[in-house]
Image (cartoon, rainbow, N blue to C red; front, side, top):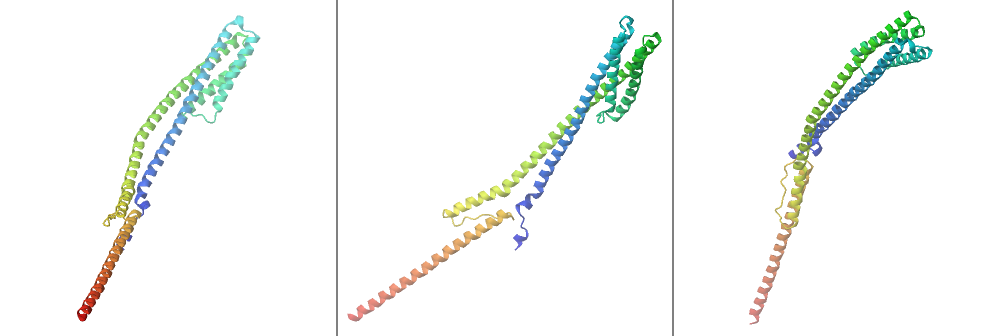
Length: 288
């Protein structure tokens, strides 16, 4: 039984190819998911830095407005002091909110610098807020103006940091998108080629033998007793082809046996008739 020793199922024959196709598809999926996650992080960084830039720009405008009001002695009264104090309190709250965010997507190097500058900005805003009610005196007003100037200086540093981080986030996002595009351009054709190879193998190992089996059965059913299938594959299709060939041989053999038996029986009938003819001829001669 050497053929059975070499027998391999279709699953065994295509197992390696299918495993390779599945591995490539899983790899493509994993790479795409990884790049999408990093793109999401970069996009989050970009949005966050844009939001910080808007907040810091508004803060710088507020500090300029307070300084302008402080320099205008004719407009500096209790209402102006209360309004300016509320504005500085709002700025200080925004700085505290920016510093307390637990999921800041900025890079570590930028985080350290931003925390240091934000701390200085917060100190100067607090001091300016404390001095504003006393700014009716010239000395306190000068100190308030100096604290506001320093606060604006550190706010501008934060704005530069936010813009720099935003540019880096945008570059990272574009680079990641480019890498994702290149990866897909490489892996997708590879996956398509492997799938095409799998379909070609199925065509050769399954579809063609089944068509040959269908043609042989049609020929055999049409009276061609020599119709057979060349069994070349040691798998289920090959076993089916071999079974068809054995069945055809058995049918042809049975037909030949039946035909020979009928021929022998016909010869025996002829011999019996011949003997009867001889007996009748002998009797006729006797009577004569």
